[in-house]
Image (cartoon, rainbow, N blue to C red; front, side):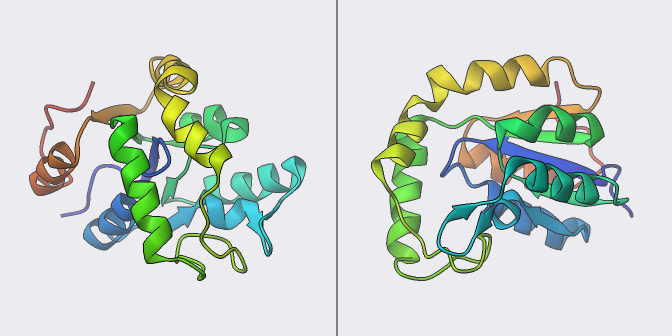
Amino acid sequence: MQPKHRRILIVGSGGAGKSTLSRQLAEQWDVPVVHLDALFWKPGWNPTPRPEFMEKVKVELTKPEWIIDGNYDSSIELRAQYADLIIFLDFSNVLCLYRACKRAWKYRGVTRPDMGEGCPEKIDWEFVRWIWRYPKDARPGMLKILSKVPADVITLKSPKEVKTWLQHGPNRKSEFIS
């Protein structure tokens, strides 16, 4: 049975598990994944200029199906308008920071699969600060955007909720849809 949702957006703090969930859903639902980090970062951690990045995002959005993971404030409202399902991983900053550090250790010196080529894993104070302050700085804006979108929105507050939701399957009514 084909899942109801074919354009899925996954958002949340760094370290929440957006890329992991997108890979799991891609396998379960047979929908291609687009990692925004891979679109944005050029070798050597050089950012793609905003107009070029937005064009790349627009190309992906016109495709009939996708799972896009990542935040990138510059394109969130546009992406949210195209999505038919948005999954917000609303985890604690302590858990996200722990996971980001664990990921940095696991991939130290190499580029992880969901990152742009030539961007070996790193963790710096700016990223740590962003994760730590996400609940105060970014979360309110995300909630405001999510309150206005036409898509189904699922907020998952823990890895246990993610696991439970994944076990429900794509077409079952979920208690997490708001």
